[in-house]
Length: 408
Image 1 (cartoon, rainbow, N blue to C red):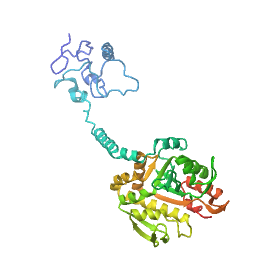
Image 2: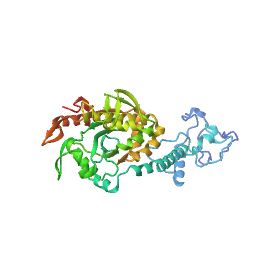
Image 3: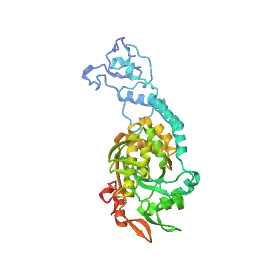
């Protein structure tokens, strides 16, 4: 029987294999009789010993490595054991810590928790502030139902059209016409607004009523009738409608603390609105802004100048609102008496935020047309070919005033 010394050497010098050797890793003493050593510096391992290890591994359920799995860089040990100072890992340059590593400890999901808290705050603010505003600016149910058949859907973040209607209704009126019609193209990603004014006396054909001025479309068919007439005239789909009550402009401008307006030409209307202003930059309160939006007498271009002044005033209101985000709650409250619209805060707030970040580009013009008297009635007749060319430019995000602007 082969005996082993405490230092691991054989006492008989024989070269025979001992298959009962519990270590099974030394067929010969390292370097004895000039035999080669293994690549890792240890003794050569017999094939039979390795075969025996594999068979015993299969018996314990340790099958072949799955395809694609990287081979272990550590020697195979039949079972986990507590290694002492003379154990195999220490002999071959391994430690118990390097063989058995614990997985990384899980850390709390702080980022996720912070995100959930922010989301909860935003939802709470929307419910507290925006929901009441949405209710105050919504159309009545019957108007919303009639509009649903005329409005076009649009893909979020892509350009869409909003028809802004200015009502000339006075207190006690049951039927009114639209004193102002502005077709607005909104491009959220490019932060661009293009406003195209449609003169209120533009001649159109209205189903069941024949030849009419376009402002009568609202009187006959409400907001849905106005949308249908504008679609027929311009050839574009409308996704939202905003009905502006001009008497409410006074409250809106006051909520903003006034606006700065560049008046392009002298205003001299003492007999109707009573407003007299020289051309130039003016700080306007709510009442002055409301009168400025209504003036159409005393201008060489008549109603065309009023259309331009209204676009200038809308631009001034937008810039003032975007320059002071803290005023938006007061603006939202004032909008309840100014606006009825199919839009909601979830449409408006991201748009205003985008405009506040980059500053909007604003284009404006009036459809190419000319005043004519037909059958004893004064109309504004649109140039169909020039209008079609203008709308092509608008659809492409260009400036419509490069094509035409008002009187032809």
